[in-house]
Length: 342
Image (cartoon, rainbow, N blue to C red; front, side, top):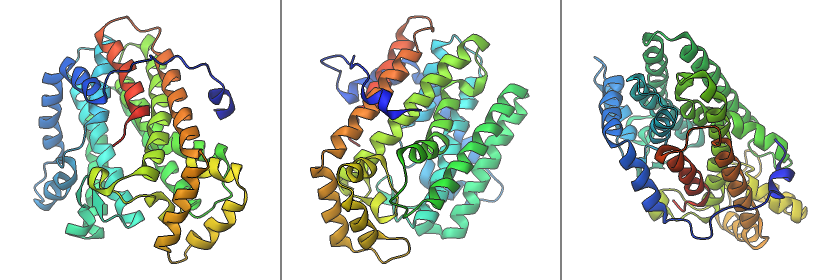
């Protein structure tokens, strides 16, 4: 998808968006009973006769996450008039898949904290974290397969494949500061947007006519989500987000703010190679200097606008759906995602 088109898109955001907390509270109130049911279904999916598995999985799954993916799934089901009980399973599966990726990511990236507490790998070891992530993935596939809808199984297998491709592609380009925007967007389409689009279509269980609009909404929302996350990383406060500032730089990730800053100042690429080159020890002071330089270039504001443009694209994709509180909540959620600060 071309970013140049998005950067020139007309800005149609409301002049006075509601406070982020109110957006979430309003959205959650619409599907409160189902969100509670998701918690129970998630516990069922994490259950195992091997007692350490639910302990490791629960260390992350029940550590206070926002449940963004289940909320998205349930709101989309409501907007599409899909009242089938399988919406709860799809919502829990989306969260379980997300849990699997986080367990794996923390091992790959050497992450020490997640959601304000020690990462599972720190408490249980890398091997246990990886294998529990594998269990989460297997249980998610099992849950959808047991529901017996071939559409859902096919959609999920396609999505999980794209997620795996995205994770591998991201690892492959770690430390490559010459990466292009096109390649960056190809990575996050697979790594982040694929799962969010699947959640938004309720695993393609909704009526066929709503699948494409909801997937288009979810895909654009996924782009907005990841770009906003990349911007937040450059501004992060460990006490609020559980992550050190510029953690992506330490891990060699060329995110959109970094790419924009390099476009504006080509000499920055050489400094990035010097301080955080592939396999080189990370110079902590140098990383923070680079983070300030990226901020001073205006790249964070530019990336912010790209995220907001994607949010507007997501909102536009909702037009075919029936008007109502759930569709409005999905639109507000898109604005929230692009503007969140934690």
